Amino acid sequence: MKSIVCIGLFALASAALVAQPVEIPFDSVPHFLKLPPNLYLGEASGVAVNSKKHVFVFSRGNSTGPAYGATAAQILEFDALGNYVREVGHNLYAWSFAHAIRFDKNDNLWAIDKGSDMIIKFDPQGRVAMVFGRKKEASDEGGPWTRVNPPRPPADGQFRQPTDVTWDTEGNIFISDGYINSRVAKFDKTGKWVKSFGTPGREPGQLNTPHSIAADAKGNIYVADRGNRRIQVFDPDGTYERSITIDVPIPPDVQPWMGAKPSPQQAAGGTMGGGAPWAICITPGPTQYLYSADAYPGRIYKLSLDGTVLGYLGTTGRQLKEFGWIHELACPAENEIYAAEILNWRVQKLILHPAAGAAHTGGR
Image (tube, rainbow, N blue to C red; front, side, top):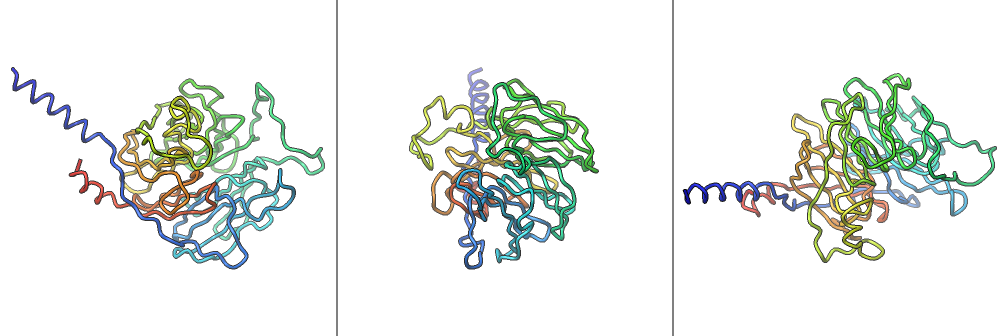
């Protein structure tokens, strides 16, 4: 009997070792993006990669106007080697405050502007192909939008500080309508309004700042419910399926990029909590992986689509391989990630070496 118990305990211990996420070795390509003279990135809020491996950066650069409420949005294109190619949408009417960009399967580029409450689809040539939302008119009384509590009810086809966009297998469009409405808006592939799902709150299916959104090969929608420190999964009709929470211990010596170290209560929940999903992306291919980034302790996590944390990399800081508020991730391959950083005004190209990490931990 004792031998049976020992075997059982050994099996449980072995399973626990296998389940432990490992730190993934990685490199950051130095000086990857090559900007021409007198052109600079501001806060890099978005990054996307098309089928030609060209890298597009949505930056809060090219700022004009007053220090508060300035126009701060610019899309820059770089080739696969990081050489500057062009600017897309120069002085576009929708530009106000850059948030995220994504490519659909047909290489159309979608830009989400949090300041103008607009989403713009560009064709591969860089021309405007579709418009969603409408910004505040210049003839209106000046000043930023005011918030009220409780928030004003959402309106079909309109947005309040949207954050991201994705598509299901049928081409339906899902826009995370983000900071105020805390919902997901669904349109069909022609741009017709279908429905919205999610309301502000903390219960399953409710949202608190849906900050990033992605879809898997089956059309399931993954919503980075940042304020609730979880990723929620919905089917293409908007039915809640499950939640993913990232709980990897935070090293005691990690310092935030700025400000005081969060209290244990702050680190355990909310926007600045460990594992709170600021940005997510899903890799292509027959076996898909979910990547998610938090602000503190400033890591990127690799997960299977069932929510198992397989590994992690990085920490806060200003050097290469350190991060300052990753705002968007692009993952065109399992071991190739692009990270757009708000605080460090840059995009890092990361090459992961998971085999080296497995060898270091004895294959566990």
